[in-house]
Image 1 (tube, rainbow, N blue to C red):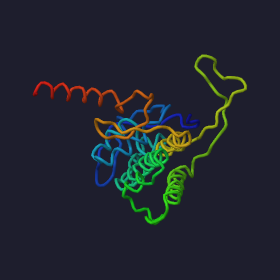
Image 2: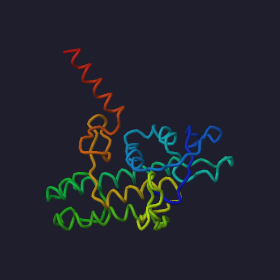
Image 3: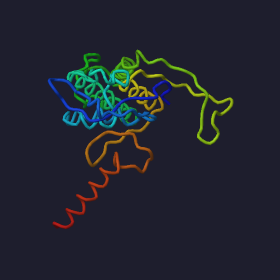
Image 4: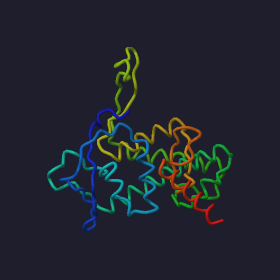
Length: 233
């Protein structure tokens, strides 16, 4: 639940002179009730940074929102986006590999990421190595949440309204990137399962144990490829 983050901007964007520029005339205000996919879609941009525009159309800019609408300042540097993409990729994949390591009892999945974080010698024991990598993951996430206040709010349901006596501990992120990390932090804290989509390789959080692909369009593309292969055999 993202209390205090009621509205953001999204819409068409283009890269101009080293900046990601939101088309303010065509931008729309929206309420991002659930951000649990945003961190994964941001991380997936490592495969193709050309898709930044599609991300902005779906979610908006990382830090600049409705208060800047009409000022000509709804723009962010491409280098800022590249840093955010790399950070999201590192956080998502480190968490996934730490989960694999916990299941197997081996640090090999984490070591195989091949990222030099300069925090643990490769010769350290698996326990020491994974402990330091766990601390690193917490630091990566906490760094993004440093300006994110938390709050206690009455629980609410669409059927009953406010549920008397029930409360939720939530966050009040000031921008889109912080909101994405706030939801991701909840997934990490609850040991949520992550999967890799067999269709495109995107890492995602399945809504159920039966979910195989990260979204319906990817599942449809996979079915079409299988059908095409059968036709050629």
